[in-house]
Image 1 (cartoon, helix red, strand yellow):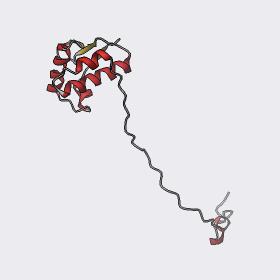
Image 2 (cartoon, rainbow, N blue to C red; image 1 turned 180 degrees about the vertical axis):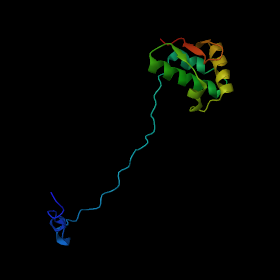
Image 3 (cartoon, rainbow, N blue to C red; image 1 turned 90 degrees about the horizontal axis):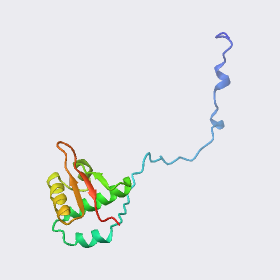
Image 4 (cartoon, rainbow, N blue to C red; image 1 turned 90 degrees about the vertical axis):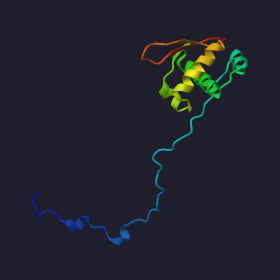
Length: 124
């Protein structure tokens, strides 16, 4: 095909040939949904948590129960980063672990320079 064979006028659109389309609403690229959460609390935990002195113990206990349910294992690693979203600091985590261990709900296996592994007790 040569340049002489190409006719641009064949491709021009006349104003009457354009169809009016309704304006489309812009799509929302990603709707952020709030995470819904449900944690089942065993009766033994319910009664023993009533003796807890710190609110951070409740937060850590619910986090541990949720993680244990998700993994299906009675032993859960507990990092500082995983609790940051729950509003628990590093010192609060240690205080809560001590209190939950004193209540007999968990056993803590500490490892040097690693997150502690927490064994959940009384899950039946």
